[in-house]
Amino acid sequence: MAKKISKKIHSFTAFFDKNRNDFYTVTVPSLPGLVTEGKDMENAKEMAEDAIKCYLEGLAKDNEEIPEENETAQVRISVAV
Image (cartoon, rainbow, N blue to C red; front, side, top):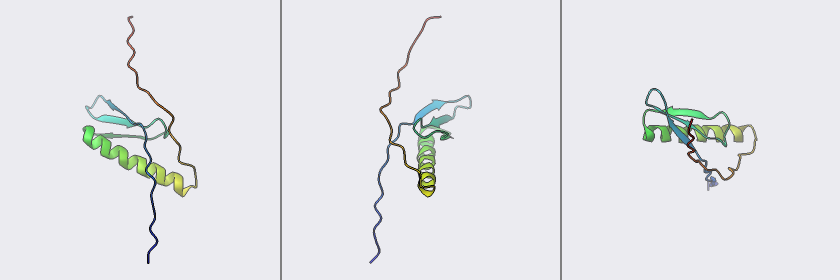
């Protein structure tokens, strides 16, 4: 009988910023250097999921610890200049 491998679900905050080309650039602050983009929000989310998976697989391959995300917040601040 084959041994079943259980996988842990990891969750990360991703930021989606519309760029000059009307694509969405995605960054994940808890995973330094992870940047991807997509032509629309749906495509950007798919690209981010794939990039995160590859990033975590790389950490596992190198026997490095997968980071746990700290609490994050995104706040819009307006200032008059």
